[in-house]
Image (cartoon, rainbow, N blue to C red; front, side):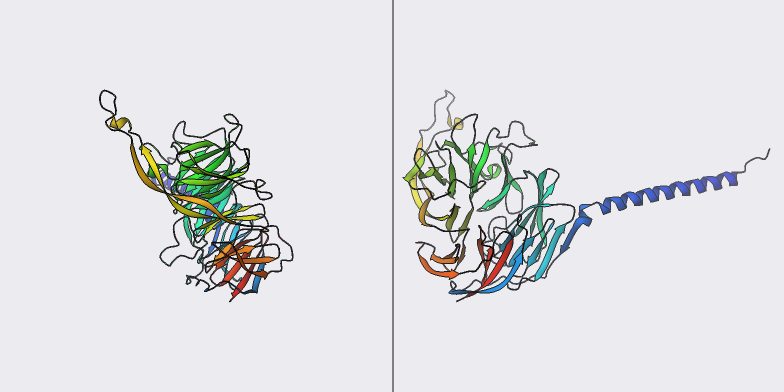
Length: 464
């Protein structure tokens, strides 16, 4: 019987090792290819545009409008516009940034493996080259992942470049809110709130996966919400604890604003108020106060302070359909005037600075060993910005735009040009809208006026 030589054994082992290495390489390549082919990276299409100058603001309000272009859009997602220089149309998976003067495509951002939940922009002013102003700026795209609106990205409005991104456990039926330096996603019973870089400042409500025990706020649904500097406010239905609606004011960034131990998951509310009403809409908000239209015990505009007190209660007649809105009240702030759309009436609120007496009670840190206080309560003067109703404009079909100290108000027949302080109409501009859309929001980009009509966007040149 022949004896196997060492050389033969070595050769066979070498061939076997090569075969194993080849199999490993093929498997690794297949896995890598599979990962790539199914990855988010491959699914993203991002065609950026060159950087362009900011649009220059129109010098005066329009005396007429010149039609420039129209573009159909997604009836569910709609379209948005940024005053920093872009109109954005959307489809199921992505966004197209368009030149506001011509409608030509400037940039594209799309994710073929994700459906869009929403597209949004709070850019009502152009800002400067160095700053877009405080808040979550640019174009915000929110994508669905599984059964949540989970992936958030902000895009530079002029180039389409991705700026910030984050994840969240957003509810599918949620809506965007924004104000002051914050923006967030408001769902049925959960609010995710962020600052300019999408860092979460607070998650409030029925938290699905909080790292801190007993930090959630459950048993309530959110019917309305608004946010600004320092605080956000929610109108809540809490049937287990109250037959009427509650107004809750919370710190917008409790981890940075207040006590040790508070975080983006946990804090105590500034105040929790029983409104005594079964319907309520937030019209205006400041750092310390909130103006709310309530339907009971009589219909009134009530201003609440963060200390829980009622600053004023003014009986009024509610506009038709004022309490029919579902989700957050349509609101915008232009030139320091807050506008809220209730039914077909635009409510304008200005802010007045009021001096109030504030009593500070000593804390446990001020107690002597005997348990008695080392100091008496102190009373100091503080300045409080207080929202007040300035005027109302009936027959409105959407949120306004602003140009050169005037407000442009969309109506069924066109646009009313009004003084922003008194609300008096200066002139009426006729606009033909073939489909007679129920909702039209306006946005001014330089010398162009954008009409956001849901399933259509139309742009007009401002003629002075």
